[in-house]
Length: 347
Image (cartoon, rainbow, N blue to C red; front, side, top):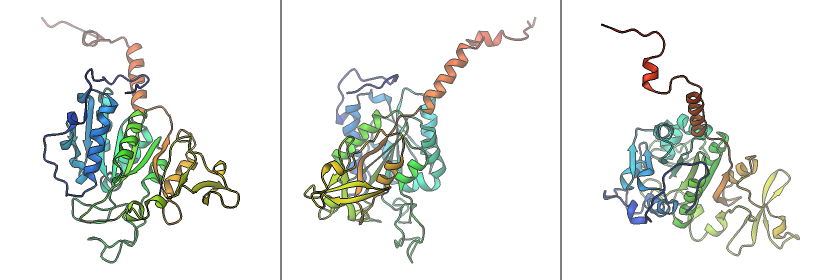
């Protein structure tokens, strides 16, 4: 359990467990879909957060990911395509006492919903965005999305897509994001950990989950998740610890001039003291951006909480404005309003 400073979300008076958040609805994702693991992670983390079940709110748009509100035993809102972030903004501002979670896909939030995505991040509204990145439109049967790798053959790119894909982390930080984390759908423990950290963050948190679509983009993340390569293709970063990876934990990341560089510990006099130590709370996003952009074959993919910087939130500032307006107003109730200005009696 943990507490938020200056937060009023009601905590549960009874200890909740995973079963309390399991819906009675049939889960209709394809067998083998990475979304099942994401759902399991949510069921793991919600009891740990400790709020009343009724104080959680799941919001979604359209897509395979957007079935999520049906599968979690909390309040939920299934919106329209690309509008989950706009709906969630209104929910949080109207009721700050809710813990708002958004389930969205790489198409839902970064294509038709791209404008809402960057602006909810820029405003820093205290919500949690889970971005399912399977690099494809799965629900509509295999069209390329804004994160599909260049050259991929899909239903809508039979000759190979010629569009440059988004890097979600780069987009989040470019929109002045205060929290960005990344996980893979093959690691429920890591997903649960970063979701917990997202819940602790006061502001917009974005968790990119590298998810497999077994039907239309199978093995899209195989260069990162395959057992044969994952030790060298992934680096699990933790605040305050040096960046070390590799099957034998003998590789690291250091800063060389203005660039990141992979080095071998023990070669050319390099020790752990030469490696970059992760600071997720650093206000300047420069190094966070470099970490978010790392990708094989030259670098491992950074997994874990990459950025968690504190800035004022939009919803808190709105509440402050409302309080100040009430304090300075002569009208404190409906009777005051009805009896203000020119009044007269009708006989």
